[in-house]
Image (cartoon, rainbow, N blue to C red; front, top):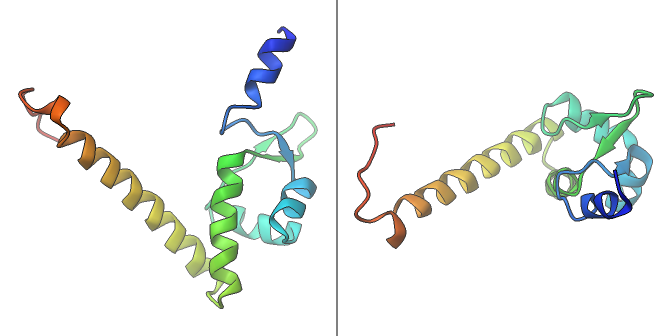
Length: 112
């Protein structure tokens, strides 16, 4: 792997670049919070060879949304479920927009 390859991974939203301690610090939360949202299956951090949790930027955005809800008084389990549903809704809206885009007009529709 070249140095250029290593640096390009830093632009990858899914690259697990952050340790649990750094992720908690960036989010202004505790490591226990990150473990709790992991146990609720909201995010699944990658494990290093030594077994340490590593988080990506996209996972940190999801964790930040859950923290926002918890800070407003939502129980953590409910906050995780809300965030999961928000993610599913966003994906469904994206697929729907692609399906109805001008580029898809004239293409035969396939049954789902």
